[in-house]
Length: 123
Image 1 (tube, helix red, strand yellow):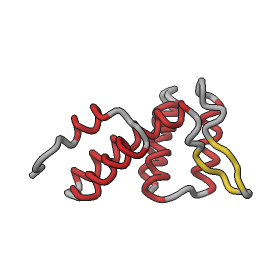
Image 2 (cartoon, rainbow, N blue to C red; image 1 turned 90 degrees about the vertical axis):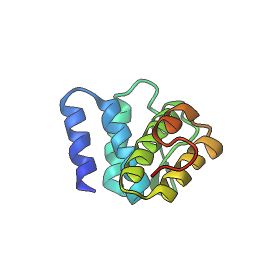
Image 3 (cartoon, one colour; image 1 turned 90 degrees about the horizontal axis):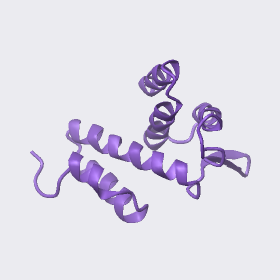
């Protein structure tokens, strides 16, 4: 999980808080909403236009706000990247499930997912 933090740090150092946010969102999808990651996301989204509502606190815990359009767009990017990572790790079933959930359940645009994982056999 440290690799996600390192990649996010590179994005921040390069003046790209959006890239850092997408990276940390992907981290939450792999490792859950740990407090340090959620705090970092809250700080990043304060700097990103349209991101002020991306993180909400409910019952004392921070969570991703699916009602925030900016967060939903970034989450779709994170899921597309995660689909690619899973495919490269030869976890095709998980990649397909991630793609299907993103497109069908959350309404992410299908094109980035089809570019990464087309329909039909993969290997």
